[in-house]
Amino acid sequence: YLEGLRSFRAFQLAAFEGVTSLESGVRAVVYANVDWIGQQPDWARFLFNHRGVLAHAPDASGARSELGTSQAAFAEWMAASLPPHQRLRWPLEAYLALVVGPVHEYARHWLAGQRTVPLASLREFFADAACRAVGLDGAA
Image (cartoon, rainbow, N blue to C red; front, side, top):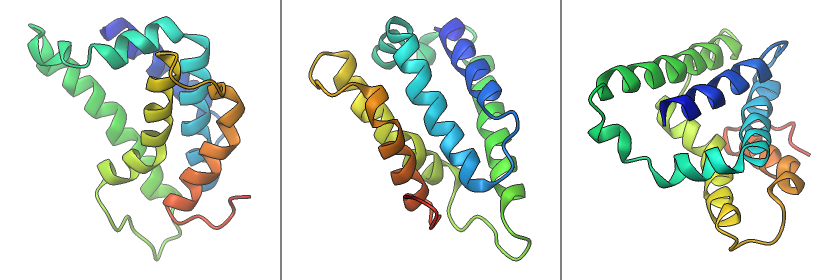
């Protein structure tokens, strides 16, 4: 389970290289989720279906800490990307839910064969929706 999470995190960090704006960062997060899930459907299916394993793992606190570090890095980046007079209005978890929640919800159904439209074909749709959801007007 942790190996799958680490694989995804490394993929997501690589997607962040060269990101220079809040909008491009939000899009990078969405693209990384869509692309990794599409390229690693078995890992993604396993991670989605075994989330509870973390609660029962002997080293669960270390794993949660590792995931928290990744989320904190996203929060720091997001806060640093805002204009100086702005700040995050809501908790990070709320922004993360808006940015990746719809992708994950659709992906779970797609991976289970319950959705026929390929996840990859909805990449821009989810990126535009994420940008709108966090208040970025640049969405097409």
